[in-house]
Length: 167
Image (cartoon, rainbow, N blue to C red; front, side):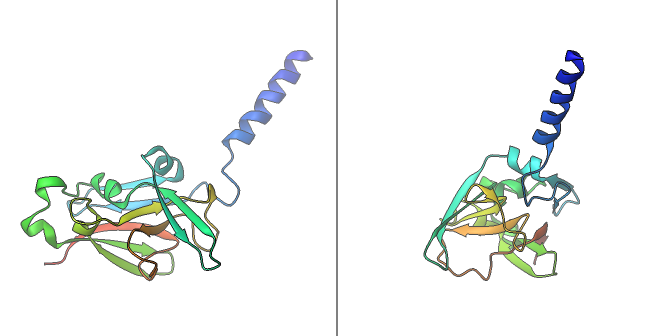
């Protein structure tokens, strides 16, 4: 009987710790596509395992809002985006097209995502103030720090990132 109680407690704890955080969709994925045909599909767990950056902003109600997630630049490196000395010449025509569930799209020049060219931090946010993103914005969104407060290029409900050559 005692052994059964221990097993039952173990199963209960395992099921509670394996459950996604409130508001997070366990099956949510983000698709990355490189110019070279390489694609990767990342889960919330995959994104959380990558190095994280924070972007802090002032919310519309004057509160401090902190987004956390991997950089857009690091994610695009996973599908072969050039970096460092390779980000010159023809590679300056590469853009990252971000797409949301509702079809909204935003383009970011690959060079503007690279720290050697700019001072803005572009992240794929997976948390807001330490918890999941609000359902209307997540489970993934683009957040930009150091580039002012204009948010037309902040994309919510992000589903896909594609590296595209525009010229």
